[in-house]
Length: 214
Image (cartoon, rainbow, N blue to C red; front, side, top):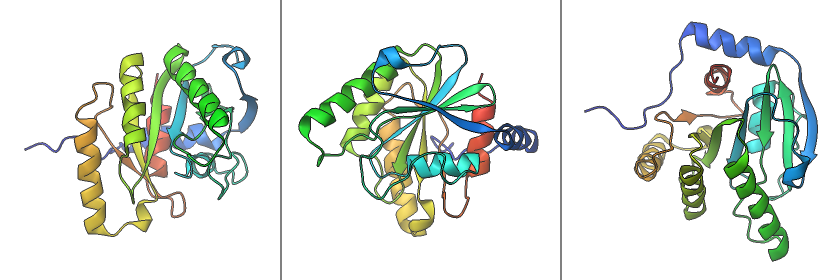
């Protein structure tokens, strides 16, 4: 029986394309707090979404090889705006973390409105990478984002972070839970990516996937 949502595997040619794309200059372009502040839709873009403290900024830094490019913090909810980065002919977009309950309610609501408006209305968005902590699996708030992406007809691909912090048996349980969750969502891309920003696992694979998006 074919495993649903297998782990992504790239060819040597695809991996080299990813290496070349991210070997070039990547720069911070701007932070956006409202939809009217988005840069011109003159190139395709991919975005990174996930619960606060899932490791979005750290993953972007690992992809680009620049430790200080995206602001990483031990304090959940630090990313409070849509941050745009230029990479080759694409935009990389770091979205505000969702599911952070300890911020003031009005701040949380503002973040959520901006997040939903962006995911529903950005025509040049080609894929959303939804980051899931491999130690915890998909939570209810992740399911809500999956459903939002379904309704917006935005293809999304799950990237599991911090895979190095999970023992093999727990890893398989959580992978099975994520696969079961994704089986209900038609916009889900049919492959998973497992990563460790600290050890570099899966980074080359994710680079290749981004480079191949057209």
